[in-house]
Length: 459
Image 1: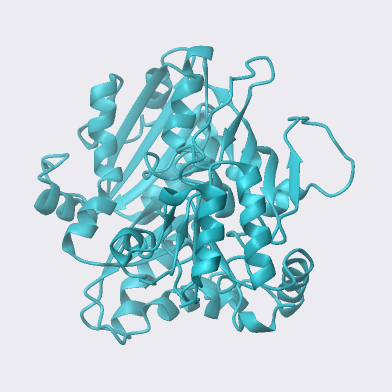
Image 2: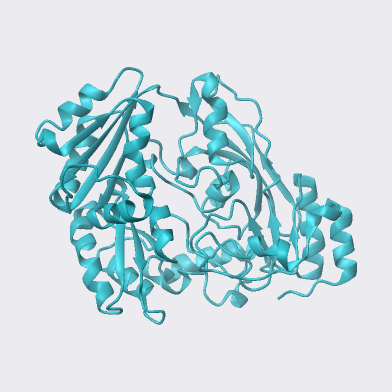
């Protein structure tokens, strides 16, 4: 753990206030463990600034002393990228809660890094707008964290990932220098778009304090369909039909019988249909007029007994619970290995069906729970009951590579996935990324142990 002298702690307290420097292990524990409980670290101090100026002064102070820092938002990450696994100081952006007025003409808003995605989606509603990124952890996941991991989520099919919403940032470099570009210009070809570089950088290049973000229309008419299907191939085919036939489709989600059984046992959800089916597909469409008829038409070839349709808010939430409840139900069983990956849609069926066998070869006790954003080729592989020594991650990632996929569709590389980065990035790409890191953070003080192996060689 990084040693913090008393004079240094006094300087930190002078900068941000006595109550915003936490050193008691009882107070810092919640900042030192990730959401899953799988990654646990420790820190000598959690520092909670409340302005870009305070962040700049803090980083200048820590830079001068060579003290490494882990920036932290809502701490909802799943790959160990936001906790002090090597004793770093935690720089918490939780106090950055300001949302500026909506620019309804441009369809934009500026938000501080600690604003939750739920707040960001809610505030613009009175202007007929909302935010396009929506994830299950919306009530705690923050703007800064979503940018740092380039979050995608439930509605990426229609609106794209976080980088697609990002029009500018205010951020502090490792030496305390401030970059501020929040004018929101959608056409600006004056060289490198530095704010886009920060999307997916996982806190390694700068500490994001504010962002200028694109808003999207809020559609009040919505329809959700839940379909029971015989196999994953049928789900992939139906997802393709929905994409072609329903322009306003926002989300197409997949889950399997294994997940529904967990929902029944641990959350008390009723069986959605009279009998359990091997595969389920949930789709939501949203428009300025009721999209239910379009959704029904697209499902015309499906047995009506295998379809549930919801248009009221309560019924839509009830159907969505079958998809969004997966994470909660899994956590009731134990600490899972959570692996979010993606493959080309042409390989999705073969890949998804190959997972149980690949896992059984490294751990006979492993139980996979598969669900995800099927239209994006994104599958969340949650593994329960695996033997502690089993190379579950390697088994799944090697399989992903065989099918030409990505070892991280969401959440980033963090510390958990860096041994497998070479499966997706060539030596040339990794060297280029290291060069960018070294140019902006030559002392390697910002989140120094994520993304790359052998972090000490950076710079």
